[in-house]
Image 1 (cartoon, rainbow, N blue to C red):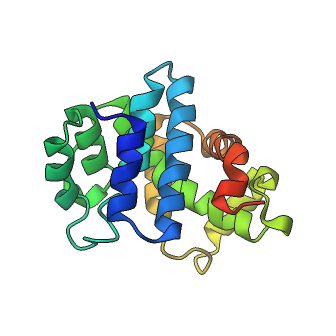
Image 2: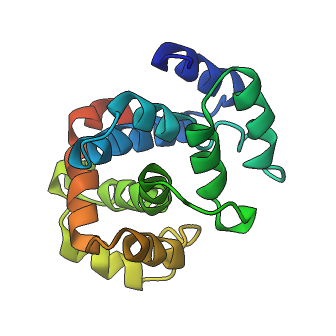
Length: 183
């Protein structure tokens, strides 16, 4: 399996925009935290988070299908490939592993928590509290491209309360705040 440096190179090769690169780094950090919570392979989960949208910028109409062949050709295991395919509800790929369910649950939520942090004083992700996230989720105009249905479905599939997921995201992003432009 390719290592993190190779995965990062693939992300940067296919993704030129800072926003989507930061999203990949953020989901990587959150997936690593989820892996620790689940006592699972932190490196595999992190790489999965890092690469989950690597093909989106260059191939938005074909995402996540375009990337599948690239990942397989480069030797990524099925566990990663299928989790990345399954993070898009429309793909029809079932989320059979815990890692796949966590990726689905955390992808949209991570982006949403980052958006909430952007409107906090000082843009500090460490200051994001669950009541603020809950309030912003009800505001359909705020971060309108984020699927509230996916956030809800992800928490349900995991059987984890949304508040706990938000706390995990905030805790995982706080050490990377400067790199992510969040405080």
